[in-house]
Image (cartoon, rainbow, N blue to C red; front, side, top):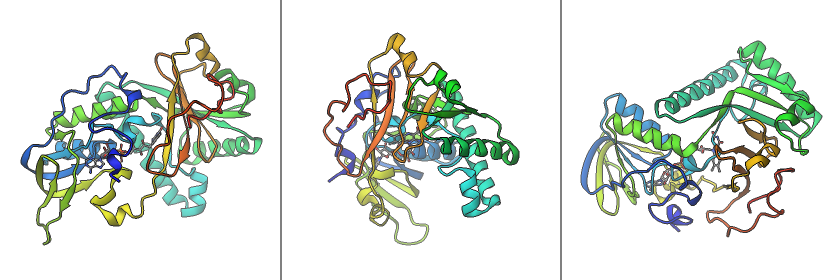
Length: 338
Ligand SMILES: Cc1cc2nc3c(=O)[nH]c(=O)nc-3n(C[C@H](O)[C@H](O)[C@H](O)COP(=O)(O)OP(=O)(O)OC[C@H]3O[C@@H](n4cnc5c(N)ncnc54)[C@H](O)[C@@H]3O)c2cc1C
């Protein structure tokens, strides 16, 4: 099975995202033979950031994207720009010691700052505020200790704990007991960021060829020899290759692909909710909860509920069916798109 086309048609971007007002511009597939210092496979944030920064550093760069930029996770994610790493600093301190935990925190703050700069440069709006919704007193007590640790030892004081009533004033769901609000984090339109980064990379001189799936790479046999990347209509010869193909890597690099586990996660958007949007959120923030398979949501500028959650561990998406509970069911925020 070709993972790139298992669920989507060639050259498309996901249906739900086509409403976006920005135009994607014309496809410019790779035709014939081309050369570059660096070839990049994949036009998500990883490939686009590499293309932008290498082009700004003076390298000749060509990026090959099978569909359109932002086709993969970068165009379909929850748009949450969070603080820190997947594990919180107290857990990281226990696991790797305070110095490493500090470095990991700093790295995440740098990544956040860089993303904000890229959003600003490409004219993508950023809305500050991510809430973390807790389901138990134990989770809330831990959050308060964590907020205190971040303020004392990491100099980060942008997170506020919110008791039940204060939290419900923002998030009127009965499913959560309390929460915290991080005003140093926030949300943005994920596909617009990818399209914006592609524009910045092009302005810096990178060549971006969409509709150009790489089918094979011949790596030079001797040290320093160039590699050749093949697409249906062209080939690209490059001194360096960056594989930024995420979970679609497949046969391009079988050794790595053999260790990739496909996990699909799902997002639905409702019709615009009008005045009822205030039953979901009363402020323009994003939310995630503490479930292992996390629920996350926000409102779009036209007041649709954009709700993510659920997982399947297969390459193919399951057939799209009606939500399990009667829609709209945002009062308990438990419906699933699967
Ligand atoms: C549903 C969902 C919600 C998420 N929510 C968040 C969130 O709120 N906040 C957050 O920080 N992260 C979130 N993430 C994670 C985040 O989106 C990803 O970590 C990030 O987008 C990965 O970027 P990438 O460039 O590595 O991969 P991708 O964006 O997947 O890009 C890979 C690209 O490579 C291309 N490609 C693959 N193979 C080839 C080939 N052979 N030839 C040419 N092109 C090829 C694909 O078409 C694709 O466009 C979420 C992810 C998902 C799936």
